[in-house]
Length: 146
Image 1 (cartoon, helix red, strand yellow):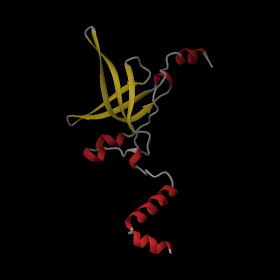
Image 2: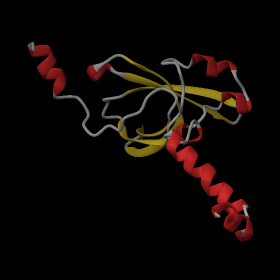
Image 3: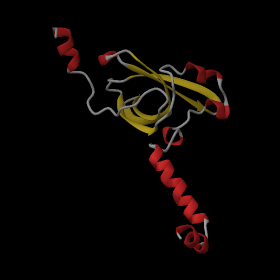
């Protein structure tokens, strides 16, 4: 490890949540107005992660009053107060530039919990059994058991 890597390592932010492109995030950024400083939230979909180390950036897109707004945040910058993952998205690409051309519902990313929510085939079989038991009457269940 060379000297530059050791110096850069000191500036890396610790405690970042794990997220990828397609996830909805809320980024709390510090904004200076005159001599005052306040925190403003920016919530949107992560279009891409770019770079590595202290130079890593993320591009976040949201639609505000019908206008698409994209903002690039340096991930390890002191300007960022904190990052919260609002929703995990199920996407097949690393860069989601195609969302720029989409409007309305077509621009939404499918959430991970709605995409293939059952983890195993056994859970699916258990659900089918439970639903079939619930739909039969006690007389039918007694006849089926004999």
